[in-house]
Image 1 (tube, helix red, strand yellow):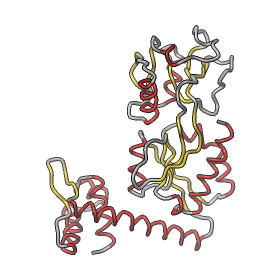
Image 2 (tube, one colour; image 1 turned 45 degrees about the horizontal axis):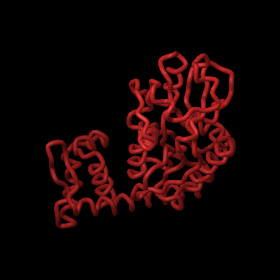
Image 3 (cartoon, one colour; image 1 turned 120 degrees about the horizontal axis):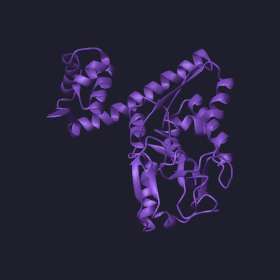
Image 4 (spheres, helix red, strand yellow; image 1 turned 135 degrees about the horizontal axis):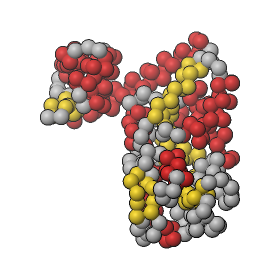
Length: 298
């Protein structure tokens, strides 16, 4: 049993496909199978079951996968910390988040962090949903995930940074544009440009409307919050979106107005990590820099 056997086995469990891992590693499927077979000989039991659409871990495989993933993550962290000790303030911070997050929440922090640590690489990986961010954390391919927080996830620590109020985005000439606020019930007859279908923000919003007994009519969903606001500006509907740092809530200038909706519960946003105390010092510093830069504005 080798570290490479364990790495390959964890990768196979995550992808559910021997051939996919073989393509990723630029080797044959037979070579991937040999890694798994060595582990099965060492443990004396089957670790994978074949299904029409791929492979899944057996009960014993689940146990080994969990232990191996934790152990490999610890080794990776140790090697990165050793690298920082040997090379000084040099390394990388790997972050996953939505497509527009860096612009809305991290731009100032990125500039400040790069000035302080010019030799550190900031690597951003875009994901389409919180679920995929959690999967990246579990796979140890990233250090930090910035996302909409929700129910507890096993093996993941969530740390809130800000709570975003909801606003109704309308064109300046819309009858609702001059109102100081709107109630959720006022939106029942308004056609909505929906938030991304698989996003946690949309799930929060749908649950809030359901709790208030409000049924809304909807246009097709869009890729992100910014697209919803753009379509509003183009006159294609209204959008209920989280109030972002640059939104001029209560303002009376610009082609789009943002009207508060006070009876919708705020949207919690922040960091998710495997273990906060296991982050590298550089990753922890970047997370804290982002938190400090955006919290006072929201």
